[in-house]
Length: 371
Image (cartoon, rainbow, N blue to C red):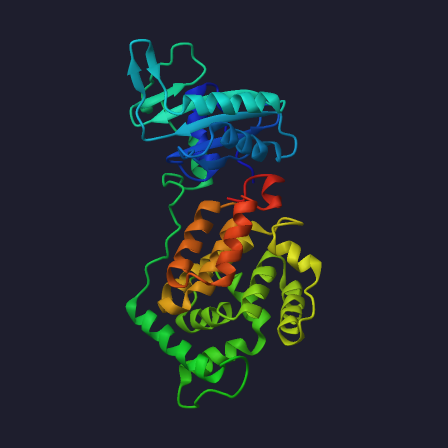
């Protein structure tokens, strides 16, 4: 069901931006593509670094907006902790030059400006007012229907950490992982010690890996420690890890096909089909967002339970899932966490390069934000 939020003035417009973004931005610029009088999503960018030329930043921001089909207008909202400057000539809003340059680039791209607003700890203001004036933040009251879209009180980093987990479960996962590593050093070799019931139970989950990965994409509750250990083991093995990404972005059948292709590549160097690679690059049909979110929930919980040295694989998968959902900030945080453990982890390096070249996957520009 679609929730429609309406704004009749600038303050009401500011009240719905967090609902469209999925959070309340901080030290950011929010860009809202419009088609006519409607917008169904928001893009967030970090505020420009002093070393980045303003024109370069503004042009790149507009290029992102125009990638959304049907866009004919844009709204710009700056969220900053920097206070306005009070001068003899009046109030000077933070990042005014950047916003003016961005609006100029937007006009050059054929986009009209819907709003250009600034939110600071001291109040909010309009960039296009001849004499900008601060208005109280109390004006920004979320509309009643916004609650249907979930809690948006946190900033862009909210939810990017790993969840808290019981220490006893961490110890259990570490113990089971050691058992799996002994029984499965590089693939199915020999059954685990019959005396270790926990390892046997986790080993049994890996009898049909695509089916196990499918279960993780439908798990409504956090994985039990044995399943979490099995998932961490899977995501630490590149052929299985990459198959998991493709399966969660598509379906069970594609997961089986990807697993076969990855194993063939590992064994003989056989090329991986192009359509599988396209999914990894964020091209093609948009994945099921709920499926990705559930898989990400499973991966984050399993990663939190895993020993530090076993986390780079799951963290890079969490990064890809976050990126696929349009959460580039979260993706970057997970990549940072992976590289803190293993600076040379190859998939983390590859994803970082890929995400720098494509801020979001192609499917993020074909409808509502990935969330």
